[in-house]
Image (cartoon, rainbow, N blue to C red; front, side):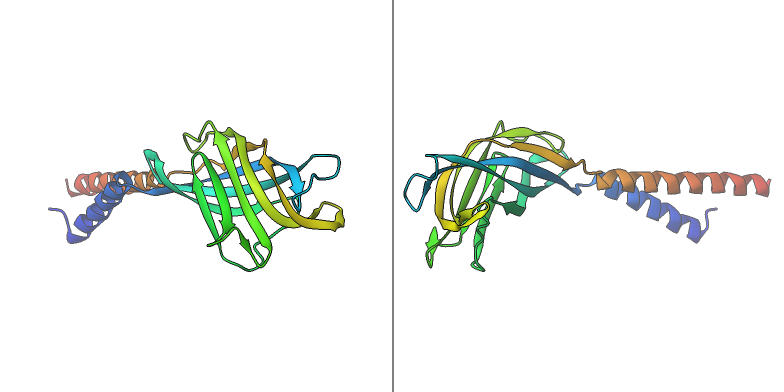
Length: 201
């Protein structure tokens, strides 16, 4: 006859195996590098030289259930822009999906003469936790200053014309770890039971 303790151990092992088969959330982190901010105007006028390109970066996470990457949700971690503009303490609205992301001043595109709007598009869209893609377009409206020329400041507007999206980490599914723990415990209990039965004979 199995002891009460053995039954409890078996129940724990079975519970771990069942949990490993249930839906668990995984998180993939993506880096967006070499975001090309193509300036078309500074304070409504053509910029120095008629146009200019400067570069920024961003990072976002995508949380999803194993087997349903497309049904996940995204969170923007940070975005840097070459003009040093920031929301200035005002709340921002961030939107992230598999085809791009955007950040904007909540409720307005211009608060107290502060512009802070960036939209970045991907093509093709991300399809999985290890996928990569390219930045295909977008736009920006930012208050800041020319890199290295702080005296030339104001509202920069233009388009996003390039960049790369790459995965930063490949998530280790949590259910794999749980399954290994469950199988290991089940194996130990099986071996222990065999040894005890042999010792009784």
